[in-house]
Structure formats: C-alpha cells, structure tokens
Image 1 (cartoon, helix red, strand yellow):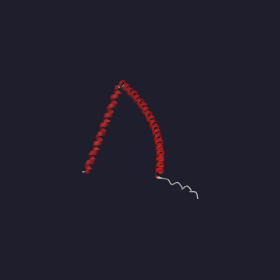
Image 2 (spheres, rainbow, N blue to C red):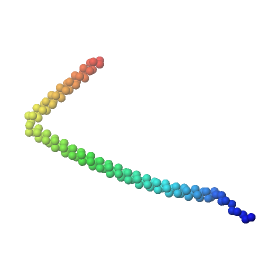
Image 3 (tube, rainbow, N blue to C red):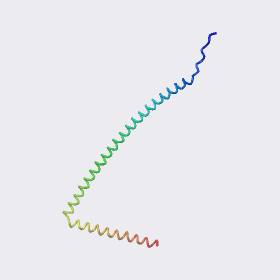
Image 4 (cartoon, rainbow, N blue to C red):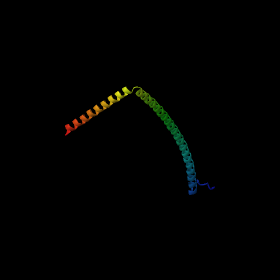
Amino acid sequence: MADAPEPATPNADDIQKSLEKQIAALRKEITKINRTIAERSTKVLDNANEQASDLSDNASSLASRATQQLRTQAQAVSEIARENPGITTSVLGIVGIVAFLLGVAVGQALTDTRRRWN
C-alpha cells in the first residue's frame, strides 16, 4: 500500500508565525483606532474652542453695552444734579437722615436681642 500523507500537525514555528501575523494585524487596528480617536478629540476640542470664543465675545459685547448704558445714566443724573442743586441737596439730606435712622433702629434691635439672651 502506498503511504498516505499524514495529517499535517502544526509545529511550533507555524503557530508562532500565525500568532505574529495576528499580533501585527492587531497592532494595525490599534493604530487605526488611535488615529480615529485623535481626529475626533481634535474636532471636539476645536468645537469647544469656538464655543468658548463665541461666549467670550458675547460676554464682552454685553459688558461693553452695559458699561456704556451706565455711563449714559450717570451723565444724565449728574446733569440733573447740576441743574437742580437745591433738590439734590434735599434728596441727599433725606437719604442721609433715613440711613441714620435705619442704623439707629438696627443698633437698637441688636442691643435688645443681646439683653434678652443675657
């Protein structure tokens, strides 16, 4: 009878070469995944940068407008005070008196509270 070829049994070299091919393929896949992650993270960071810049510009614009509005109102109040010095003095005097009376009332209330607890 003719000798039938024996089923090929993988030897250690074949197994090692097969594993090395698989490892090389896995390394290529990992490299692709790393590139994809880097590209996506760059896009996300660029988007976040744009949004932060837009927010900063908007906040700066709002602050500028608010400052201008305050300046305009302060000039209007200043003009009215210059045109009516008597009324200005009366209003400031009344505000001072009210603040003094309020301070006395708060001081008295605090003193009464201390007396009750002692």
